[in-house]
Length: 333
Image (cartoon, rainbow, N blue to C red):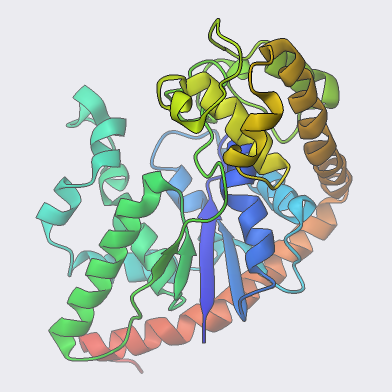
Protein backbone atom coordinates (compact mmCIF):
# COMPACT_ATOMS: atom_id res chain seq x y z
CA UNK A 1 0.00 0.00 0.00
CA UNK A 2 1.29 3.46 -0.88
CA UNK A 3 1.27 6.03 1.93
CA UNK A 4 2.19 9.72 2.01
CA UNK A 5 3.63 11.41 5.09
CA UNK A 6 4.70 15.02 5.49
CA UNK A 7 4.50 17.90 7.94
CA UNK A 8 5.15 21.58 8.63
CA UNK A 9 6.39 23.24 11.80
CA UNK A 10 3.90 25.46 13.67
CA UNK A 11 6.25 28.42 13.93
CA UNK A 12 5.38 31.79 12.42
CA UNK A 13 2.85 32.38 9.66
CA UNK A 14 2.71 29.94 6.76
CA UNK A 15 3.56 31.74 3.55
CA UNK A 16 3.39 31.46 -0.22
CA UNK A 17 6.44 29.17 -0.29
CA UNK A 18 4.69 26.73 2.07
CA UNK A 19 1.61 26.79 -0.16
CA UNK A 20 3.36 26.33 -3.53
CA UNK A 21 6.07 24.01 -2.23
CA UNK A 22 3.92 21.85 0.03
CA UNK A 23 0.23 22.46 0.73
CA UNK A 24 -0.97 22.69 -2.86
CA UNK A 25 0.85 19.48 -3.73
CA UNK A 26 -0.54 17.73 -0.65
CA UNK A 27 -4.06 18.59 -1.74
CA UNK A 28 -3.41 16.95 -5.09
CA UNK A 29 -1.65 13.93 -3.60
CA UNK A 30 -4.59 13.07 -1.36
CA UNK A 31 -6.55 12.17 -4.50
CA UNK A 32 -3.82 9.91 -5.88
CA UNK A 33 -2.68 7.93 -2.84
CA UNK A 34 -4.56 5.43 -0.71
CA UNK A 35 -3.32 6.94 2.55
CA UNK A 36 -2.19 10.51 3.33
CA UNK A 37 -0.91 11.62 6.72
CA UNK A 38 -0.18 15.31 7.25
CA UNK A 39 1.38 16.21 10.56
CA UNK A 40 1.93 19.48 12.42
CA UNK A 41 5.45 18.83 13.68
CA UNK A 42 5.40 20.61 17.04
CA UNK A 43 8.15 18.40 18.51
CA UNK A 44 10.49 19.64 15.81
CA UNK A 45 9.47 23.21 16.62
CA UNK A 46 10.91 23.11 20.13
CA UNK A 47 14.46 22.49 18.90
CA UNK A 48 14.59 26.30 19.22
CA UNK A 49 12.96 28.34 22.03
CA UNK A 50 9.16 28.75 21.73
CA UNK A 51 6.58 30.66 23.72
CA UNK A 52 4.14 27.95 24.94
CA UNK A 53 0.97 29.99 24.31
CA UNK A 54 2.16 30.98 20.84
CA UNK A 55 3.09 27.39 20.01
CA UNK A 56 -0.38 26.14 20.95
CA UNK A 57 -2.03 28.92 18.92
CA UNK A 58 0.25 28.28 15.94
CA UNK A 59 -0.54 24.55 16.01
CA UNK A 60 -4.25 25.29 15.72
CA UNK A 61 -3.56 27.94 13.08
CA UNK A 62 -1.56 25.53 10.91
CA UNK A 63 -4.33 22.93 11.22
CA UNK A 64 -6.85 25.53 10.04
CA UNK A 65 -4.58 26.48 7.13
CA UNK A 66 -4.22 22.84 6.07
CA UNK A 67 -8.00 22.50 5.87
CA UNK A 68 -8.55 25.90 4.25
CA UNK A 69 -5.99 25.07 1.56
CA UNK A 70 -7.98 21.97 0.62
CA UNK A 71 -6.70 19.08 2.72
CA UNK A 72 -9.85 17.10 3.48
CA UNK A 73 -9.86 15.68 7.03
CA UNK A 74 -12.28 12.98 5.90
CA UNK A 75 -9.72 11.73 3.34
CA UNK A 76 -6.42 12.57 5.06
CA UNK A 77 -5.11 12.37 8.62
CA UNK A 78 -4.34 15.75 10.22
CA UNK A 79 -2.80 15.75 13.70
CA UNK A 80 -0.18 17.26 16.00
CA UNK A 81 3.03 15.25 16.26
CA UNK A 82 3.23 15.47 20.07
CA UNK A 83 -0.16 13.76 20.44
CA UNK A 84 1.33 10.48 19.14
CA UNK A 85 4.06 9.21 21.47
CA UNK A 86 5.38 6.80 18.83
CA UNK A 87 7.36 9.64 17.25
CA UNK A 88 9.50 10.19 20.35
CA UNK A 89 9.78 6.50 21.28
CA UNK A 90 10.79 5.38 17.81
CA UNK A 91 13.26 8.27 17.50
CA UNK A 92 15.19 6.87 20.49
CA UNK A 93 15.28 3.38 19.00
CA UNK A 94 16.37 4.61 15.57
CA UNK A 95 18.98 6.87 17.16
CA UNK A 96 20.62 3.74 18.54
CA UNK A 97 21.19 2.56 14.96
CA UNK A 98 22.35 5.92 13.54
CA UNK A 99 26.13 6.47 13.37
CA UNK A 100 27.38 9.83 14.62
CA UNK A 101 29.12 10.41 11.31
CA UNK A 102 25.79 10.43 9.48
CA UNK A 103 24.48 13.27 11.66
CA UNK A 104 27.74 15.19 11.31
CA UNK A 105 27.14 15.37 7.56
CA UNK A 106 23.75 17.08 7.89
CA UNK A 107 24.24 20.48 6.25
CA UNK A 108 21.09 22.03 7.75
CA UNK A 109 22.43 21.59 11.29
CA UNK A 110 25.67 23.27 10.29
CA UNK A 111 23.74 26.17 8.74
CA UNK A 112 21.41 26.67 11.71
CA UNK A 113 24.03 26.16 14.42
CA UNK A 114 26.61 28.38 12.76
CA UNK A 115 29.39 29.41 15.12
CA UNK A 116 27.31 28.49 18.19
CA UNK A 117 27.53 24.76 17.55
CA UNK A 118 28.58 23.91 21.11
CA UNK A 119 25.69 25.79 22.73
CA UNK A 120 22.70 24.76 20.58
CA UNK A 121 20.20 22.22 21.89
CA UNK A 122 20.85 18.52 21.31
CA UNK A 123 17.40 18.31 19.70
CA UNK A 124 18.59 20.42 16.77
CA UNK A 125 21.41 17.93 16.18
CA UNK A 126 19.18 14.84 16.42
CA UNK A 127 16.33 16.49 14.48
CA UNK A 128 16.93 14.23 11.43
CA UNK A 129 16.48 11.09 13.54
CA UNK A 130 13.11 12.35 14.77
CA UNK A 131 12.19 13.11 11.16
CA UNK A 132 13.10 9.55 10.25
CA UNK A 133 10.85 8.31 13.06
CA UNK A 134 8.03 10.53 11.76
CA UNK A 135 8.24 8.81 8.40
CA UNK A 136 9.14 5.24 9.33
CA UNK A 137 6.64 5.11 12.20
CA UNK A 138 3.89 5.02 9.57
CA UNK A 139 5.84 2.94 7.06
CA UNK A 140 5.36 5.81 4.62
CA UNK A 141 6.32 4.96 1.06
CA UNK A 142 6.43 8.51 -0.33
CA UNK A 143 7.38 11.82 1.28
CA UNK A 144 6.78 15.19 -0.43
CA UNK A 145 9.79 17.32 0.52
CA UNK A 146 11.53 20.49 -0.54
CA UNK A 147 15.12 20.42 -1.75
CA UNK A 148 16.33 21.59 1.68
CA UNK A 149 14.85 18.46 3.34
CA UNK A 150 15.97 15.96 0.73
CA UNK A 151 19.17 15.14 2.66
CA UNK A 152 17.09 14.33 5.74
CA UNK A 153 14.93 11.95 3.71
CA UNK A 154 18.05 10.24 2.38
CA UNK A 155 19.14 9.77 5.99
CA UNK A 156 15.74 8.23 6.83
CA UNK A 157 16.28 5.75 4.01
CA UNK A 158 19.79 4.97 5.32
CA UNK A 159 18.47 4.42 8.85
CA UNK A 160 15.67 2.17 7.58
CA UNK A 161 18.15 0.13 5.57
CA UNK A 162 20.59 -0.10 8.49
CA UNK A 163 17.83 -1.34 10.81
CA UNK A 164 16.54 -3.88 8.30
CA UNK A 165 20.06 -5.18 7.62
CA UNK A 166 20.98 -5.36 11.31
CA UNK A 167 18.06 -7.71 12.07
CA UNK A 168 17.67 -9.40 8.69
CA UNK A 169 14.13 -8.12 8.22
CA UNK A 170 12.15 -6.17 5.66
CA UNK A 171 10.44 -4.09 8.32
CA UNK A 172 10.76 -0.47 7.18
CA UNK A 173 10.15 0.50 3.55
CA UNK A 174 12.61 2.90 1.95
CA UNK A 175 10.55 6.07 1.40
CA UNK A 176 10.76 7.83 -1.95
CA UNK A 177 10.94 11.65 -2.23
CA UNK A 178 8.12 13.47 -3.98
CA UNK A 179 9.38 16.83 -5.29
CA UNK A 180 6.49 18.17 -7.31
CA UNK A 181 5.38 21.16 -9.31
CA UNK A 182 6.81 24.47 -10.40
CA UNK A 183 8.27 26.89 -7.86
CA UNK A 184 8.91 24.20 -5.28
CA UNK A 185 11.58 26.55 -3.91
CA UNK A 186 10.06 30.03 -3.61
CA UNK A 187 12.60 32.72 -2.86
CA UNK A 188 12.49 35.88 -0.75
CA UNK A 189 10.82 38.93 -2.28
CA UNK A 190 13.73 40.99 -0.92
CA UNK A 191 16.55 38.72 -2.10
CA UNK A 192 16.09 36.27 -4.96
CA UNK A 193 19.05 34.19 -3.81
CA UNK A 194 17.52 33.29 -0.42
CA UNK A 195 14.58 31.01 0.30
CA UNK A 196 11.31 32.63 1.42
CA UNK A 197 11.25 32.05 5.17
CA UNK A 198 8.93 32.43 8.16
CA UNK A 199 11.91 33.55 10.22
CA UNK A 200 13.01 36.44 8.00
CA UNK A 201 12.82 39.70 9.96
CA UNK A 202 11.26 41.59 7.03
CA UNK A 203 7.54 41.08 6.52
CA UNK A 204 8.11 42.27 2.96
CA UNK A 205 10.26 39.22 2.22
CA UNK A 206 7.23 36.91 2.06
CA UNK A 207 3.52 36.72 1.29
CA UNK A 208 1.77 35.22 4.29
CA UNK A 209 -1.24 32.95 3.95
CA UNK A 210 -3.06 35.46 6.18
CA UNK A 211 -2.38 38.52 3.99
CA UNK A 212 -5.32 40.33 2.39
CA UNK A 213 -5.38 41.50 -1.23
CA UNK A 214 -4.06 45.00 -0.43
CA UNK A 215 -1.15 43.62 1.59
CA UNK A 216 -0.29 41.12 -1.14
CA UNK A 217 -0.29 43.87 -3.76
CA UNK A 218 1.90 46.12 -1.60
CA UNK A 219 4.47 43.39 -0.97
CA UNK A 220 4.66 42.46 -4.65
CA UNK A 221 5.03 46.13 -5.67
CA UNK A 222 7.92 46.43 -3.22
CA UNK A 223 9.53 43.16 -4.34
CA UNK A 224 13.13 43.58 -5.40
CA UNK A 225 13.83 43.58 -9.14
CA UNK A 226 16.70 44.53 -11.41
CA UNK A 227 16.70 47.57 -13.77
CA UNK A 228 16.21 45.57 -16.97
CA UNK A 229 12.91 44.69 -18.69
CA UNK A 230 11.54 41.20 -18.15
CA UNK A 231 13.70 38.56 -19.88
CA UNK A 232 13.00 37.16 -23.30
CA UNK A 233 14.61 33.75 -22.77
CA UNK A 234 14.87 31.18 -19.99
CA UNK A 235 18.66 31.38 -20.20
CA UNK A 236 18.58 34.99 -18.99
CA UNK A 237 17.01 33.90 -15.70
CA UNK A 238 20.25 32.25 -14.58
CA UNK A 239 21.79 35.65 -13.86
CA UNK A 240 18.57 37.40 -12.77
CA UNK A 241 17.36 35.72 -9.55
CA UNK A 242 14.62 38.21 -8.69
CA UNK A 243 13.10 38.01 -12.16
CA UNK A 244 13.33 34.22 -12.04
CA UNK A 245 11.57 34.16 -8.66
CA UNK A 246 8.66 36.41 -9.65
CA UNK A 247 8.13 34.65 -12.98
CA UNK A 248 8.31 31.28 -11.19
CA UNK A 249 5.67 32.37 -8.70
CA UNK A 250 3.38 33.61 -11.47
CA UNK A 251 3.83 30.37 -13.40
CA UNK A 252 3.08 28.23 -10.35
CA UNK A 253 0.00 30.23 -9.36
CA UNK A 254 -1.40 29.91 -12.89
CA UNK A 255 -0.45 26.22 -13.26
CA UNK A 256 1.89 26.95 -16.14
CA UNK A 257 5.62 26.70 -16.73
CA UNK A 258 8.11 29.55 -16.86
CA UNK A 259 8.80 28.61 -20.46
CA UNK A 260 5.13 29.20 -21.27
CA UNK A 261 4.86 32.63 -19.65
CA UNK A 262 8.14 34.21 -20.73
CA UNK A 263 6.86 35.05 -24.27
CA UNK A 264 3.79 36.69 -22.69
CA UNK A 265 5.88 39.17 -20.67
CA UNK A 266 9.14 39.33 -22.64
CA UNK A 267 10.50 42.88 -22.71
CA UNK A 268 7.70 44.26 -20.51
CA UNK A 269 8.28 46.44 -17.46
CA UNK A 270 8.20 44.94 -14.00
CA UNK A 271 5.53 47.40 -12.83
CA UNK A 272 2.84 46.09 -15.18
CA UNK A 273 3.82 42.48 -14.54
CA UNK A 274 3.68 43.00 -10.78
CA UNK A 275 0.10 44.27 -11.03
CA UNK A 276 -0.94 41.08 -12.81
CA UNK A 277 1.01 38.94 -10.35
CA UNK A 278 -0.70 40.66 -7.42
CA UNK A 279 -4.15 39.98 -8.93
CA UNK A 280 -3.36 36.30 -9.45
CA UNK A 281 -1.89 35.88 -5.96
CA UNK A 282 -4.87 37.56 -4.32
CA UNK A 283 -7.30 35.43 -6.34
CA UNK A 284 -5.59 32.21 -5.23
CA UNK A 285 -4.72 33.05 -1.61
CA UNK A 286 -7.67 35.31 -0.73
CA UNK A 287 -10.28 32.52 -0.49
CA UNK A 288 -7.86 30.40 1.55
CA UNK A 289 -7.29 33.23 4.04
CA UNK A 290 -11.04 33.80 4.36
CA UNK A 291 -11.74 30.10 4.94
CA UNK A 292 -8.90 29.88 7.45
CA UNK A 293 -10.39 32.77 9.44
CA UNK A 294 -13.80 31.07 9.42
CA UNK A 295 -12.30 27.79 10.69
CA UNK A 296 -10.31 29.52 13.43
CA UNK A 297 -13.56 31.07 14.65
CA UNK A 298 -14.72 27.53 15.47
CA UNK A 299 -12.07 26.24 17.92
CA UNK A 300 -14.13 23.17 18.83
CA UNK A 301 -14.06 22.07 15.18
CA UNK A 302 -10.24 22.28 15.06
CA UNK A 303 -9.95 20.37 18.34
CA UNK A 304 -12.21 17.64 16.95
CA UNK A 305 -10.16 17.32 13.76
CA UNK A 306 -6.87 17.13 15.69
CA UNK A 307 -8.26 14.60 18.18
CA UNK A 308 -9.66 12.34 15.46
CA UNK A 309 -6.44 12.71 13.50
CA UNK A 310 -4.36 11.69 16.53
CA UNK A 311 -6.56 8.63 17.05
CA UNK A 312 -6.17 7.62 13.41
CA UNK A 313 -2.40 8.23 13.47
CA UNK A 314 -2.03 6.19 16.66
CA UNK A 315 -3.95 3.29 15.13
CA UNK A 316 -1.36 3.15 12.33
CA UNK A 317 1.83 3.91 14.28
CA UNK A 318 1.34 1.86 17.45
CA UNK A 319 1.42 -1.54 15.66
CA UNK A 320 4.58 -0.43 13.83
CA UNK A 321 6.20 0.48 17.15
CA UNK A 322 5.17 -2.82 18.76
CA UNK A 323 6.64 -4.77 15.86
CA UNK A 324 9.82 -2.69 16.04
CA UNK A 325 10.19 -3.39 19.78
CA UNK A 326 9.70 -7.12 19.17
CA UNK A 327 12.40 -7.09 16.48
CA UNK A 328 14.83 -5.26 18.77
CA UNK A 329 14.16 -7.73 21.58
CA UNK A 330 12.11 -5.80 24.11
CA UNK A 331 9.88 -7.78 26.50
CA UNK A 332 6.25 -6.87 25.80
CA UNK A 333 3.85 -7.96 28.55
